[in-house]
Length: 441
Image 1 (cartoon, rainbow, N blue to C red):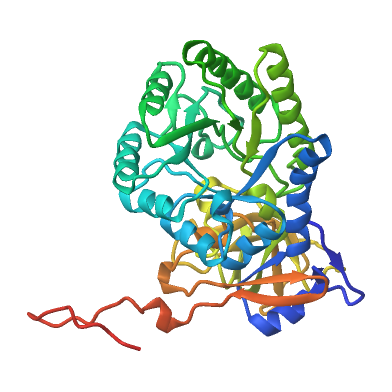
Image 2: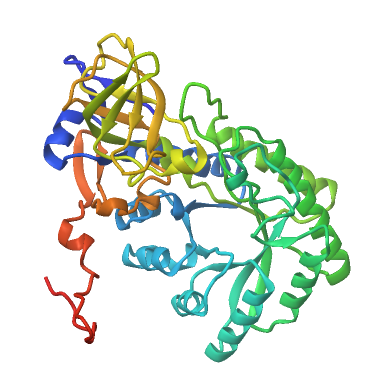
């Protein structure tokens, strides 16, 4: 992510030095550069606008959902993806335009679907036959209709971690094209009086650094759309090609610029429309990580140092897998700096350990830093996606605060949890008695 260093050698983000942020809000602390969020959003939106191509850029809020974040997304003319009642509730609380909300999920409950229908959101991405039947019942009960996209798995395996592959045939998401499953689902949707099929959706994976997988998926979707046009006289108004655009976490990562991803998709859709004599559909994409990932960093305070001669030196911080579980889940890698000693020589190698009671709670195995002493401030970069949204209370640690910075100003957008809040749902134990008595604070 972009950052600067002031004359005192202190890291600045959004025009605010990290010493000020640490003193005001404590650590661990998530910090987002709102200017960077806006820049990333505009890279997608303006690329389509410049070419005059109808499009929706939907922020995948699973990457980081909060009222303030959704409000920034609205300011930047984004649409919004939600995958749960909680994410939809957050969007509604933020005052986000309901017609620009799309709902995903491989196991949407009746409650989630009913909430979406009652809110009159813009679109539901249908994922399985059970959901088709459930949504049909709800729409009949409510005597209303809903625009839907049919999610298909195009059989494309993107070059990414196995846990975040979603477009191959063997996936929990969507209807398989190869087996004819998607054909049966599509025919079922056309027969439903309550569901208005507006197009197709696919998502081939995450943290993808090239465009070939997206282009192959586009071709496969056009092949099936042409088939359905011939068989059913159906013309898709929308082609949603998902997200998964990669970002730079470390110097080893080499992603494309965000507008390059948009241009490649746009060019391929135009080409296939002309080649197959198919009306140009509106293009939808769903960047999440690409919007917020490199806009965020996490501040920690250094604690204990344990040196094992001839093996490694462990440097522990006051956070870990409670605020960033991705290294444990995906072996995700990050860059780290001594945030208040940016101009000093980096000459020691540390293994950055979290403070959870778990051997796997390691943030970075080989980090080169100046000589660190307890109390130093450390910054881990590009933690804006799936940091706070995957945070947890393991070992009953309170969740960290979130701060937005922009043009030299800073504001708290999610406050740090208190210990009272960590235990707020706990009930007292009564031997041989009723446990309905609630603990009140």
